[in-house]
Amino acid sequence: MKKLNMASAMMIVLLSLSGTLKAQQQQVTKTAQSPEAKAKADAEVEKKATDWVASLSLTDTAKATRVKNIIATHLKAIRDWNNSHSYEAVPAGIDPATGKALSTMDRQIIINSSLPKSVHENLMTGLRADLTGEQVETILDKYTIGKVAFTLAGYKAIVPDLTPVEEATILANLKQAREQAVDFKNIKQVSAIFEIYKTKNEQYLNTNGRNWQQLFKAYVESVKAKKAADAAKKLN
Image (cartoon, rainbow, N blue to C red; front, side, top):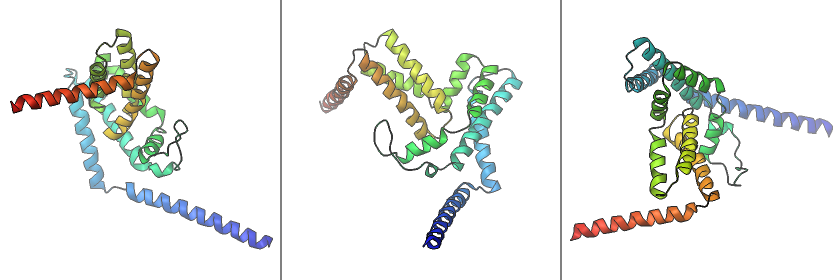
């Protein structure tokens, strides 16, 4: 009986190893690129980095080249990490904060957030070495398609009497979201990072005498009413 149990245990181990190796092979197949495809992807990254730096109108060519190389290196690192680290590496389970099942996006965010810290640090250190604070923010906005300004404008529309202190707190959270979001590959992942801080902002407003749910509901109703009024004017 003991021999039989040992044989069964060995079979389970072998099957488990086989499954792991198969998953790893599938991941390699998914992320493998032909030299031509890689060259094309790298060229797209180089163009993006060049365009972003061009928006700064730097007159120092050497500085512009350094900044462009820093951005391109970071973009490639983010792309390669995302492509070589599947969400499947994170076991399906629940979010301990909500009890809800982890979504595919949740699992991809988790695996991408394990990116070595040095990748982010190299980007920020490099940018700050050659750019002003305002120029650094411009580059970070390029990564996140201006979501800080857009989201802040939304808060101001929903909460018209936002106080200076409230605005400063919300803006600080959004800027933190922006810097964290630059380490994620696409706009869906960037938006997922911003959602974390939007929730934080809404909780902040609620704990400081606001009722976010009511404010948002009132805003939606006012937008609908305006659309209805505009439509009525056109008919008349």
